[in-house]
Amino acid sequence: MILLATALAGCFSANREDLVPTTVGVVTEVERLAGRSVAYHLASGEVAEVDLASADLTPDGGAGEGMLLLTGTRGSGRTWLIALYPNTAADVPPGCFQLLATGVGNGDSIDFSNGLRLSKAPNFDPGPAANDQYNLERVTFCIGERGEVLSYG
Image 1 (cartoon, rainbow, N blue to C red):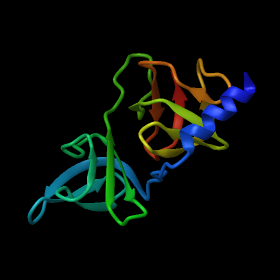
Image 2 (tube, helix red, strand yellow; image 1 turned 60 degrees about the vertical axis):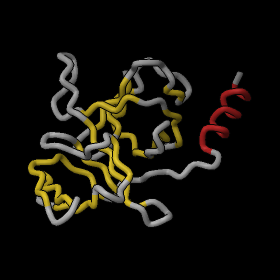
Image 3 (cartoon, rainbow, N blue to C red; image 1 turned 60 degrees about the horizontal axis):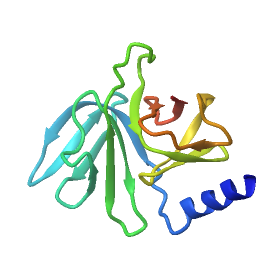
Image 4 (tube, rainbow, N blue to C red; image 1 turned 30 degrees about the horizontal axis):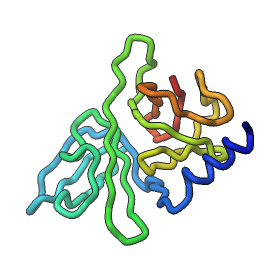
């Protein structure tokens, strides 16, 4: 069983490009610039400019106010952007953003099925997961405002 889990983890990470964000923050304002470029103003005071015409976007329209913005650059030089909606479930703490994906633990990080690699928070709660395998259907991760994985489940 352990051998199978190790083999699956190896397949999961083979030939993948990890998307490690260089900019993370809650969007407070979206400013339209020339063409299809957008300036995302973040709660931290930082501004992230993204050309929506050439970036890889999830969701397709980019980020909106109140969403958690995660962005960076692929090895090819192409910008990527992933925006997460606030998790509004009653049993979720404030500042939790919903990531619906599967994942595999990689030390202090988690490699997600959408390509993201995020660090686990120091008090990360794995919920129902065992052996760093986060593969239950329709179970979400809680991502904090700094882009750390707070919990699963």
